[in-house]
Image (cartoon, rainbow, N blue to C red; front, top):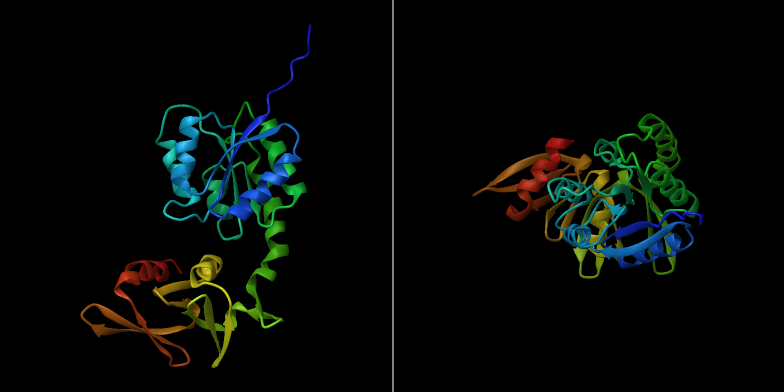
Length: 264
């Protein structure tokens, strides 16, 4: 009787950054028993893909435009009755770990993902493929994740800024606020400024888990530096920082900003 070879694990890569998808695809090419069957750049594309083709595992970025990773998982739950794929969250931020396991993710990988960590996570899916998600050892995963986060936490409290051939390590606590200047941002640091070739949108995505919040189209503020919020009339507010700097809170960002403050 011929031996039965298990079919490859069908994987969907969901990440809004093409370079990140490319890296994960390259790593999976080296992973035995896996096959990348689709890629998606956002939550809507992810949902459309799993409705169109059979997927066993999704490598899912958490921070994506319009529909983040958690919203995508919720949409999958309310979708067709077919079994949902296993989920491995892949993200640059460590702030979402507990929430990831709350929605029964098989694993949680921090970027940049190493081949060893990806192999460990994919192996866990292979082993539990017939008893997906709820039967994995959550306590063991949380213990190992805690050690992983502790080794990275100090580095994540610093920002690596490259300007004019110079590399500067800035403590996030030293940055008061950030303003947009086209394809650059200006970092306001204890009365000094530093120009950095980066978009405000990219900086916001990176710093959002570290209590930075957008207050206008061109301004990001370190919420730990806020002293008071003052009404400026007609529903407008002025954000006053501890160093007496006053910044305008745009109406378009007011609701999201106040919601962020309530969660701190």
